Image (cartoon, rainbow, N blue to C red; front, side, top):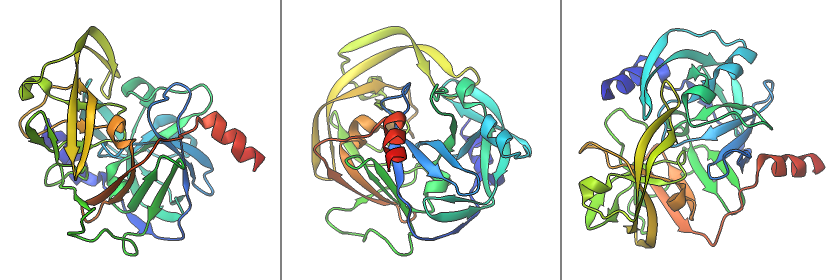
Length: 311
């Protein structure tokens, strides 16, 4: 099924034009029903303020069908996409020219589907989720994620860059030749892996069985929310605790979640690891800088809204 994703990307799901402007900080928040993952509040300008899921591990920027309907976006064509919960059919739309983080984006294409029923993103009671900002859009920016101030900055990659060969700069190879997703070299259980950098998952997922790791506990028949036709799948989940090393950093006893894989895919590096760092991604050049932090303070959407109104 890898060809499905490649075909989708090659057939018009890549972003259009970006006109760079002055950076506008995007607040980093979480809704009440998803406390462990990150969303951003985007003031799109004439189309209003909306909440988007921030997912570096998802290739295709996505519009929820309700958001597309509210903006009267015509659905042009269909595409098939494989998720952890199976293959789903989705529409394709063109996002109207709008502001994102201080920049103007035009002719951006997005996958259109009902996120609530076909993904792990469930509708919060307090605010609608407009869509998913994926790696195909983020690759046009120098991306800074700061959990300590709960902010995201999208900067012009022509003005900011991470220098090749610098001591604190990490190389981020592409997942494959056509993918906008980036991977990070790590050492785990005596093996060298390249899991995808994935802010869209709260945990880190690896194929522990293939690596010969010993699990510490198991949840049998667990219901897992995931992208796919039904938005969920039932399976046994095995948990591991292992040390992870990368770029001079050593994390002790990291909780890992089982994920079946194929030899050319090494899993997902999630927020239980990434959330411990101030992150800078020079997406275009495939480089990153990760600086350890003491702790994070990502507020709920309600908390942010309350403080935003007071200001």
